[in-house]
Image (cartoon, rainbow, N blue to C red; front, side, top):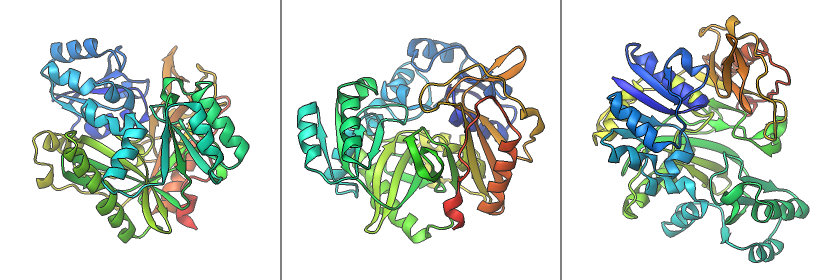
Length: 421
């Protein structure tokens, strides 16, 4: 097998690792990849949005399967472009990826099909949005409609914060064109939960659930990030609630996409809130989550490639997917200043002291300079501990994370603490 993985972060490192773990003889390329991925795959210096170059490379190298990691190329139609070039691709086509590419599309879809979500209103001009906002109770949530690297959502706990978030999003363009339209949404209280599922049209095969930690600081304080840590499974959330979420949200959404003429094939990621009224939808993503993938795939016993192939062949409902009983906890090590501006090129020490028996280290934002790893992003590394339960996995993750250092390193110290209360 010759496989091309598209992307450059921790999610893609985890995907490459999972594909290579099952069969080390597979030839894997990654475009553009990062310094950690380079230890497992051959890096290709082509950006995720350079569709013509990616198609040409895949054709010339006779790639058997392309796996698309990030949201931006999916929303821009990379699967359509690769398929038009005669290539086999795992991921949703552009019309299905809109479930993540437009929050307004997603909210309207859920509303049309009666799928549980927060009450909301959508706006294309600032004055109308401001008038609506002024009439709403606080706290409230303001979301940029388009993709914003996981940062286009502001949970506002004061009137002043809400006014500022709306102004920054729509007028100051803090999220660029993604903020031309906004969703103003009811604030939901409860526990968050992420359910990723392998989906092929109406067939839904849920993965083991995970929980992300979006705010940058301990205690869920500070601005939202792309994710500061995750863990799986969720021992404090009853299986009955997980089942309800799958039956009332994930499966009906897959069926709704088929009914809309946008059948979804790939990984459908439901971001959920478990409220007093049951699970409700916060968001949908059209790909593996990051950093959820870093704790979910290490628990997958079935060959990931077998699942991809079954999806593409229309037999996802006929394969067995097995999960490990082991727990996994991921602690993200981030650059000083993240999610704002941050330095790059800082030396990383301690990676050579950690074996895979200690922890898995997935590179998110690294590069290689003069023979050593240096920082090259906001989220630099995801350190994953595994163990017989959350407590053991968490201890191993933090023990390994403490041995890795770079100037200005920041990380949350309370990842997975909710599962141990």
